Length: 279
Image 1: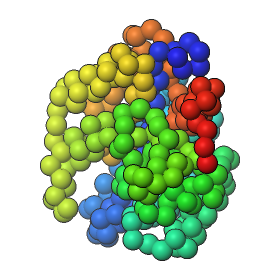
Image 2: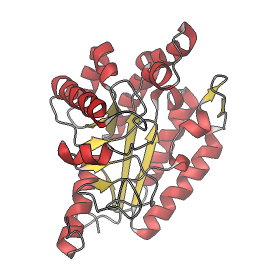
Image 3: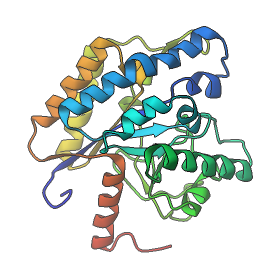
Image 4: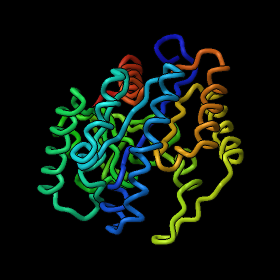
């Protein structure tokens, strides 16, 4: 039981990338792809915040440092709610697969400082863009005192990871695993360059997400959903997301929490059961 009384945890994260997905990951610097990041600011984020306000629901926002630099007012709108967890999501939405540890450390140090300045909280969670934990990232997460990561695919429930290799040592943080099935981008991200074919109907995605939630509920587990403002922010998709939340609310004993609370509760349960012991 979560918190001694909940059968299932429901946790939502918003990867608030703005232009950095296009400039940092895809290296596209022309106006049209960059304008897709602008959609986050003009439409996607305000609609998500309104939905969370209506449902009195906390969420986790994964925010690259560059987004804080370029969109302080949007970040202030998240901060002023006072209920949302903010995680580290790279500085430029860069891949950390091939960069030296010293460079990754410096970017992480800068990103942590920007989150502390903009949101008045120290990030305790990480999501490496794009769901790609680097060979040195786990060492840095422990060095900087992170409590959870959310970049790996090793289960559909929280777990204590061994990284960077399967047989590596147990890490001193919780893994909140992701999945492409519970990410809006594979369904809704259409792009010519690089080509991505996402043009699913909201009804199809709602069917998949409801079934995933039902599985988590039956097993007493954790349902973790990842959305992006420019993907989910279209009107019919926002209506679908709100329908999903209301559907989950119709079940008894569901705990709606942000990622940090879920990670802390999972670790507390493991420590109480004596199953967290070890380096």
